[in-house]
Image (cartoon, rainbow, N blue to C red; front, side):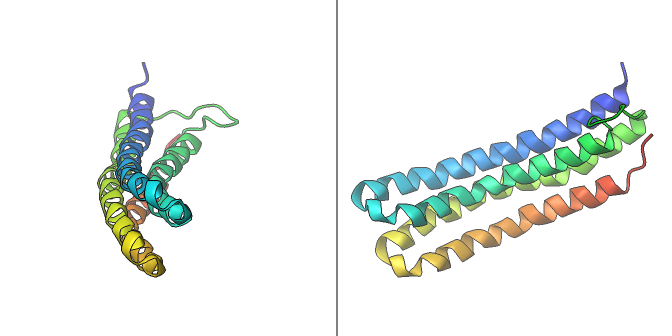
Length: 158
């Protein structure tokens, strides 16, 4: 068994799994808060959809990092490259920033989005302020993605 490849693929999988779990939880939190308001004010659905969907981006960032790994390993349109155990470990560790940042920020963004639902309920004209506050949490997911990409780009394989 090629343990270098195993570690690298585990890194890609962890980026998707951790960031995806954060997105799932965050979307669930915000959407649950939105459901109650939709039952009373269905016309507010577009604003609530945006607040509920925002935490879903973390899962996308995890997928982007995994895609970088897949390309680096030569799994698309070519032969897989040889990866030493050390290189595989480097790739695994490079995937952790996007995975963990996505996990934590996805959940917190869902909580901020759920609080934004209250803003939409009481002051619908202030909707964009709620979106901006939720987007602040996004910054850290983006930084995790950038860190993972930069780390992955610095790892030489093959």
